[in-house]
Length: 555
Image (cartoon, rainbow, N blue to C red; front, top):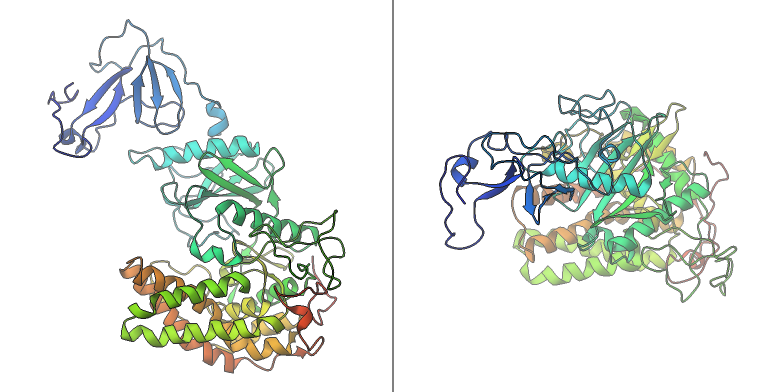
């Protein structure tokens, strides 16, 4: 078959796939040669899918099928001649699929200018909102817009269609917030007619769980998402301000959209945290750590990522076990010491013989920090932690209350590590440019550290054991993430500007951590339960509460 544009005949390629492209014109299969593909408008006169707008159509067995969204229809009538510029048979049938086009794209979702509907211009985060998942504020969500030749928005339509059916959503508008369907994760915001919004995070279920998320013992995306959902549901049950889980139509917390696994939550609206409001961040973190949490009984291990083994009254004695009416507990944090520390030490051991000379001091510092926290872990209180508390992951509501968002690292863990990470990352402001590594470097600021600690200690006092390990707690996140980067660079062979920027940021954090620890003012402590035995995070049972936790709590 020749190219329908220029008449060049196809020949078999020497090796590999043919560079020729298939399409449909006038309900008939056509081929396009590589030379004509170089023209910017080569897809303009091809038939398009009425479901999603794709030109990636194929004719087989008398039907036309869209290779992007899967919609099919009969292939026209026999009265149509081969394509000669005619737009197709006027009697051709309407597209059909498991859901109508109205289910997939609501009216107004794709305005003529290609921007998201609902009054928000392209390239701007909705007013008062904070972009989740690490997407820089004010950036254009990659791949958003009408269908194009690369098929990204087309595949978005297929995923979104499944999500709408799974959650029975009828949104007024939709926009992609972060990620890409060509990668392993993507997030969508669906605005509801009543003014609310639902944020759906989708992750490929057929790829391994990211290394930095396995520190809670989860080995699959399913287990990890179930743990995240369990944590958020536990927070909702205890009145803590955080996103709420939106279940699928069957009531399950995790949905399935083809190869994607999804977790939907309410969208928390509010203003970005201002530089002078760091005490609100500290207070929100202190209230979180002050919540009384359930602990697993001795000798029982929580199912990875599925929450602690708990029950009504569980953890109130050394013999407590799983009760028949067990209340679901929160999941485990991605930095839970039982799994995170051995995994990080194993990575550091694996790269020890491959280290360049200039990396050895950093490697030694990472290892020393991990071992110090591991030795102290038996005597440190356990609590529910956020895992990534910094100004970019908090919003301030109209009533002045701060709420933490982006809980993918949250769960049961060591609060001193959560606080230590926050003391470092509170030196950053939200909205930093992602492509400028220098903007993410920090210098210790006593005022910022004091503000976070003032807010934190208004809600929770540190235990003596936590106060002693706080300098290492400040460094722990860098050591845990640094071990992953070392493995990727030295074993997986990942190099380039991005890896250089990550290592530079780690060096900066380690250099600043010691000074940040010494700049921290005297932190009020509590000597309650000074033996520390009852607060073991994973080796012993406990009372399920933090030492000297204040009764003040804001819901």
